[in-house]
Amino acid sequence: MSDLINSSLRALSVALAAKKVSAVELATLFLDRIEKFNPALNAFITLDRNKTLAQARAADEVRRVGAGTPALTGIPLAHKDIFCTKGWRTTCGSKMLANFVSPYDAHVVEKLAGAGMVTLGKLNMDEFAMGSSNETSYFGPVKNPWDASCVPGGSSGGSAAAIAARLAPAATGTDTGGSIRQPAALCGLTGLKPTYGVVSRYGMIAFASSLDQAGPMAKSAEDCALLLSAMAGFDARDSTSLERPAEDYSRDLEQPLAGLRIGLPQEFFGEGMDADVRAAVETALDEYRKLGAITVEVQLPNSGLSVPAYYVIAPAEASSNLSRFDGVRYGYRAPEYSDLTEMYSRSRAQGFGAEVKRRILIGTYVLSHGYYDAYYLQAQKIRRLIAADFQEAFKNCDVIMGPTSPSVAFAFGAKSADPVQMYLSDIYTISTNLAGLPGMSLPCGFGNNNMPVGLQVIGNWFGEAKMLNVAHQYQKITDWHTRMPRLAGAAQ
Amino acid sequence: MSLNLEEVARIALLSRIELSAAECETTRDQLNGILGFIEQLQAVDTTSIEPMAHAVDVVQRLRPDVVTETDRRADFQAVAPETEAGLYLVPRVVE
Image (cartoon, rainbow over all chains, first blue to last red; front, side, top):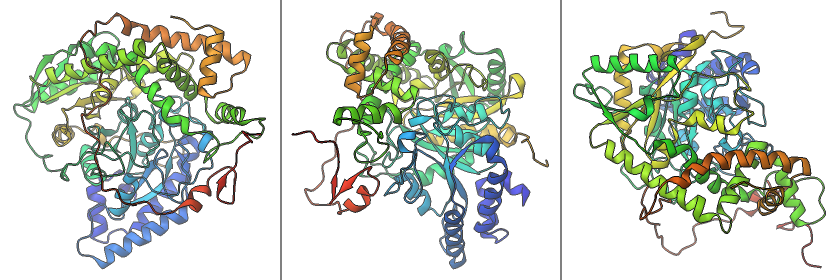
């Protein structure tokens, strides 16, 4: 049984199909690990063993009946707590929604349940996905399984820590400015943010609607391809969902990489990247050259403006989206108030944490009368410059590569006192969100203190199958993605 | 551009977030730190650049004008802080 915790989703699917293991046994294996290791890691916010086992029994029944069973049937996964799940608490990491039980499922939850996957629980995250370290969660920070004194990254930190500790074989995540890729990098995982519009945002609690996108997090590119094939698809309930034919994202995994042109933006290799990260990324690029790829230098001259542009656009959208939390229809309501305005402003003051409030205030300011043109409109114009840079670069390359994060996982408290320092930890990931492009991170070695380093791969619009191919070929000749941390209290 | 306490209080009111006097001071300093950081955007020449509101250029889809939603009022009100007779309760706004 114990080798199953490090198995690929394909291997789990084969074991289930061959009746070597049942969905109930598999769910129990992971639930028992969660029970044992989660108290130290704090990766999960909500667990419900009975619900999980009921889903697993249903999956076993589907497999027993047989023919045409989807490959993922009976494989467990956990959801970031930003996805609404009917009958399970959905908190978004906030006191505001600490007792919220959604009356409906998110599209992604529906799709993965439809594919037969079994929900292990709901994963911790930065409050309303605003953070890069998981320190803003109302439910307490998540610990990095590689070193409990370090952050797991954020905002999908619970997803990353759960998979890294092998408490779940896969998880959902969301990425507004790097929230799938940065925690994947800091915890040694593979994670993919698809092209904007590929995965429906229905039932995914909104942060910045023009940037938010859901994607898979798992150990390998092969696993992510299977998950993305099940998650993606048109959904009329999301007005920005794209009407495109369904894709098998595994189709190109085995394509050779000979002749692949990898663009290296000089802006991603300048100052600001730690030496250990640089060394691991350079070594990975050498592996790609051995696989027959060629590297070309490209320019993204406006990428330095992506973090400041993002911190106008994302808070602006957040201030609008989060106005729905008013203490009237759902969520937290302050116990004492004398009139309606006070009820709103106290409920929001008490229900939101410090970082969420900061972003709402900044967003409100940049959208307010007299400042809109100078900040918001200017940031939107710069967003176009950033997006245009990528299109220019893709004239000369098939994918772009660089570091995912400028450093390996940092210590708790290292950046939490200065919001701007924290914002800069997403310096390499934010520009792809602004441009709507797909981006992924895959493990490419270890840096200082033996902490994982992530290699970022950026594709052009709808280039997911190519990116997964590029990642998979690397993972066939390296074993970084199979490494797992030694957990305190484990027999291993 | 840097904010004073009065402006912070006005933004907090617009945001419907109550701030104590002490919070106003720390908030002012933090917001000014962030505004100082985004100030660099002002130096960029964006003459004749179209603002980009969204990651992909899509037009809003139209659908037939028919009822598609079912009545789930009871489900939705089950998660409300306070309801009565199918209505959301808030403090009196009209005397």
